[in-house]
Amino acid sequence: MSRPPAHPAPDDPATPPPAVAPEAGWRPAAAAAVAVFCTVALAGGVAAVVRVAGEAVSPPPLPPGADDSAGRIDTVPAPAERTSDVAADDRASPADDSATAEAGAEWLDSTAASTGIPRRALEAYAAAQLRAMEELPQCRISWPTLAAIGEVESRHGTFAGGEIGPGGRTTVDIIGIPLDGTNGTAAIRDTDGGRLDGDTEWDRAVGPMQFIPRTWDRWGADADGDGTADPHDIDDAALAAARYLCADGRDLTSDDGWWTAILTYNESASYADDVLDIANRVVSDAR
Image 1: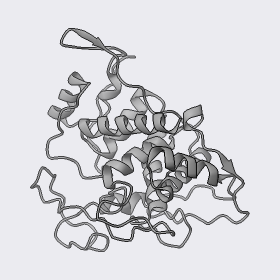
Image 2 (image 1 turned 90 degrees about the vertical axis):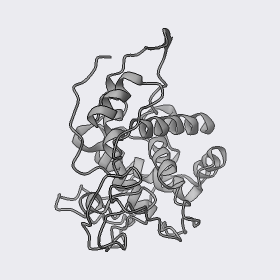
Image 3 (image 1 turned 120 degrees about the vertical axis):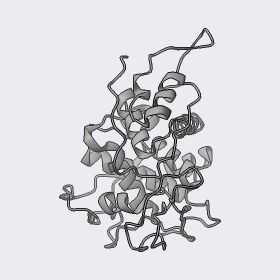
């Protein structure tokens, strides 16, 4: 693996960018670069073996692709009617003719039990993977990556003391702290008039996948076809996250693609390390 060029930090990270990106654990050289320059994709250039204190250390593997055995979802035929997706930005909506499959109940039950991921959240992550496989087959994003982000961001929609209801919406809205430049946050003035986060002075991250309002305005999705792209709905948020991570033709089974995607979602090297650790843990637990 060779080191890819550094990319500038994105204009619209999905979750709040840190004021200073902290250093990562197993990737000292790449983490230092992220901390100093607040760039993305440096982690993808870490060599296959790095040296820490003179000892060779192999980096952990990436999460599986959607077509790898550990990333596959046992499916059943979807209903004949498929809900349409209402795009929240001015991009053309993807083709949406018919559903090919949805996660099977037995797979959801067994995987939720073995991983500890709430079944309703797992259903949303699996549906987002299957949808991405139709729309963006080159991306190969799989449910463990989405589940890991969901755990880091909101403990799968339970952070505020609620849970995900049967329809996919959190029973308690999850709204982050003001992004006012304090508490280690970047300063982001209000962009939505408080419509999503209730704050007319500063933006706040919202929902189980913790989207910043200005990012949701561009990437928000209506996965369940109820006519509203709702960041507090795990189905909508998981699909929006999958599309966001897959942007720019990324292949999330490649080092460059996966690390660039995660560090674009949140410009913190330690955040990316946490996502990778959790994704690999749920893959192991699901076996």
